[in-house]
Structure formats: structure tokens, C-alpha cells
Amino acid sequence: MSITLYNTLTRRKEPLVPLDPDNVRMYVCGPTVYDYAHIGNARPVIVFDVLFRLLRQVYGPEHVTYARNITDVDDKINARAAEERVTIRDLTERTAAQFHADIAALGVLPPTVEPRATDHIPEMRAICEELVKRGHAYVADGHVLFDVSSMPDYGRLANRSLEEMEAGARVDVAPYKKGPMDFVLWKPSKPVGGAGKTLQAEPSWPSPCGIGAEGRPGWHLECSAMSEKHLGRTFDIHGGGIDLVFPHHENEIAQSRCAHDTPVMANIWMHNGFLQVEGEKMSKSLGNFITINELLATEKFGGQPWHGRVVRFAMLGTHYRSPIDWTVERLVQARATLAELAETLGGVAPSASPHPDVMAALEDDLNTPSAISIIHGLAKSARRGNDATAAELKSALQFLGVYDNEKPDDFFVGAGEKQIDDGEIARLIQARLDARKDRDFKEADRIRDDLASKGIQLKDGKDPKSGEIVTTWELRR
Ligand code: AMP
Ligand code: ZN
Image (cartoon, rainbow, N blue to C red; front, side, top):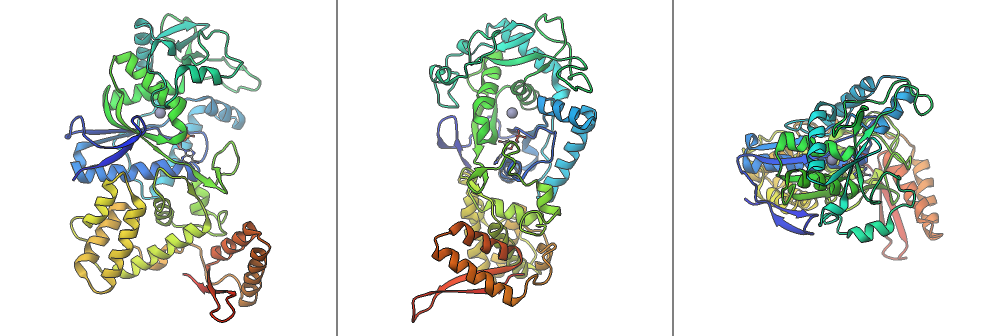
């Protein structure tokens, strides 16, 4: 078995050749814990959980180390703690616990290690010292800054030259920076009562490089220190969302490689595409986000709560590198598929290893949509009475974390009996047809999703005589 993965660094698919097959090492940037994680944040967590499972299957569970950190020192955390008038520790502890509960419901395994930034401050100071000593960083105005001009291939991951980046740099570059793209490794902390209503001092630790006043690390430095501590100076895979390519990962690479004089930080860099709602990235700053918790426990999305495995299955329906459009329809379909699979596989004992075709699809750059279409084919064969296939299919679904031994009905959390009467359905179907005639597809889709959320699945067909579109419906649950 051999795994092939797309590497952002080289822009092609490459076979994974572990540095040490007895200890395959992967680092993924984890959440900054100041608020509920949204469903976009769940994407890397689920995607890299599938990869973690695959690595364990191929190399043996005891031969894989997966580190996914928790960023518990960050300006957004300070600001939120001040706003809520709670201590930083209370906020980060509470948020991290919520994150764990949310992703456990999505079938995500705990990583091997989950380092916290605040437990690695001495390691961060050591990297600062090393970088200054080697001429890659300088001290200015209480900060330690990385000098990007000292690294000839800065920009290689982002595939942009320093000149290009500098040309696009903002005009209001901090006066203490030598070059506009130089970035912060360490910065001063404000005492109590700093910027307005600070309830507490910004977190601070003794500074490195002879800086007298206390300070705190920059975000990029945190991941360099944690990955080195838990995985070594060079490791196999580094992952995160596509938005992290620049500057976060570019800067992690700069820090780690220049501090340790290594040719690479990680051999393969993987990035998941965005999860979008109506064509826009789901993010806190755009305010268009649904938290994992809301999706699982409230009626905010599509008028009902959704089972964690349904969410996971829906997420895996799109390849991890493509953008994914998060819709009610997607969840309805995932739920219908899982319920059908549960119907077929209820009494089946899983085989010792998952069906090889499903594994082969995953080994090809985690091709989950292909794995799912294989699953559909296997389910057909299982329904025709092929017991060996049924056993391997069940094992594959359990391996993917999308099904354990649920009954079909278990996937319908809160989707009670039909929540709408036949007359209203007919009226909405007509309204949708009218909207389509007026080419108002947004409205037409809205009506379809609204009905889907109530368990009403529409099917469009053509009347063979008149050629007109006829819409029928069925209750899916
Ligand atoms: P953050 O807490 O913002 O640092 O994000 C945690 C992880 O979620 C990072 O790997 C981000 O790249 C990823 N992420 C954030 N928003 C989205 C989104 N809309 N779609 C996919 N991944 C995202
Ligand atoms: Zn990181």
C-alpha cells in the first residue's frame, strides 16, 4: 500500500515516503480558543482525522504521531476575555473543552498529542535566540523580528517572490521593521489598563534576546516551537486550511528552517479548501458562520439539529482540496445515504479490514468522493446478498468514522414527523416553479432547501406529453 498526497510546496501529488516508517509524524494547526468553533473550522479537523486513520491503518497505530495544537495565547483571546470580563485561563479552558466535545460528536479521534502554546514558551524563546544568533532576526523597540531578506527562498510555499510581496505590502508598515515583510516573533505585552478597558494585563513572560520588559510570542512562532518539541526539526506532513499558506505556514517554515539550518521543515504540506455558504468563506469576521454546536444541538441550520455522523459524511462528500458549499440539501442527502446503509448493514459483522477499493481511493490523495461512490456500489452488491462485501463495507464505514452501529432512525435527530401539510407543500412547489420561470434560482433553491429541512425531498421530472416540468415529493426519513 502506498499513499499519494498533493504537496502545496511542490504543487504536485507525491508518494508519501516517511522519514521513519516506525514513526510517521504529522502536525496540524489547531484552533485559537476564544469562541465556539464553526463548521468551517471542522473541515481541517475531519479531513486530517481521516488522514490520521489512514496512516494508522497503513503504518500501524503505534507508528504514527499526530500533533494538533491549541493556540491559547493570541490577541483575539485577550480581547474576548476583556470583553466578557473573565480571565484568559477561564476563557481558553472553557473554549477548549467545548471544542473537544464538538469534534468528538463528529467522530474525530483525539490526536496523539495536543500541545498548548503556553506550555512551550521557553522553546519559543530559544528559537528567537537562535535566529538572532544566526543573523535571521533582530531586536527593535521591544520586539524580535524575523528578517525575511536573510532567507533566499522566503515565499517558496506561497509561490511568490519577496519583491512581489513587498510591492503589495500595506503602506502603514510599523516603523521599527527593517523590511515591510519582516514579521513578529516576539512582542511587548501591555500592563493592566492598557488599550481601554483591559481587565487584566496581556499575558506576558520574560523576553528573550536581552529585552528587559516582559512580552509574548507571535502566532507563527508557537507552531514552530510545538512541532519541533513533539515531532522533531523535520517531519513528514504539515496541514491546515488553505488560508494558512501565507503568512502562517510560510513564516513557520522560515523560523524553523533558519533556526535549525534544515532544508525543509516538513516534507509534505497539505491544505484543505474553504467551506463556503452562498459562495463566501464561512468565517467569524464575515459573521456568516454556524458553529458546530449550533448545527448539532439547535435548529439554527435547516430548522433542525443534525447527527454528528451525518455532518461528517456530508463533509467528506467533497474532495478536501475543493471548496465545499454547505447546504441543507447536502445534509439531507448524507442522512438519507447513512440511513440506507444502516438499514442494509444492521445485522452484519464487520470484517477485520475495510474494503480495499475504499482504501485505495483514500490512498490517492484522500479521495473521499471516490470512496463514497465506491461505497454506493458496494452497498448495492451487499443488498443483493453478497455477505463478504457487506462485511468489508461495514468495516470501511467504521474506519471512516461515518457509521458505527446506529439504527437508520438514529440519524434523524429532531426531524419529527412531517412538519408541514400537503396543501402547503403543493403551494411551495408551485411557488418554486414560478420562481424558476422568473429565473429567480436563488428563491427556487431556498424553497427547495426549506422543504428539505422539513424532510420533504423534491424530484423534478418531465411530463412526457407536454414536456413541462412536474415536481413530485417524498418524505425522507
Ligand atoms: P482559526 O481558529 O481561525 O485559526 O482556524 C482553525 C483552522 O480552521 C485553520 O486550519 C483554518 O485554516 C481553518 N478554517 C477556518 N475557516 C475555514 C473555512 N471556512 N473552511 C475551511 N477551513 C477553515
Ligand atoms: Zn500553525
